[in-house]
Length: 108
Image (tube, rainbow, N blue to C red; front, top):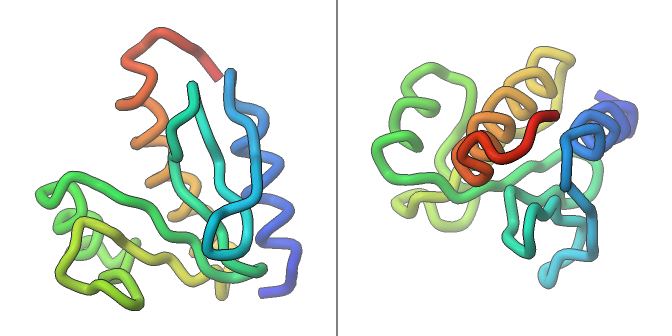
């Protein structure tokens, strides 16, 4: 997938109420709500986000995410943006976390 996946993902997340983007400390960009990271994007093709372990395991079992590329036993997951479907999965997982973080206080 070209850099278009990054653009689609970024445009979608920035359309959600309160979401901003800033540089990520390990390179790339991170998506933030109320000062807390939702997830981050390395380059054009790799999304990482931290989830509760049980939720992390469900997303991995569904095939929509992979164990983190460096810390596979952690609560982090990685999504490689190779196809449009991968971008859709990343948006789905990030939105799930966004909903949990905002607890119904904000609507996209």
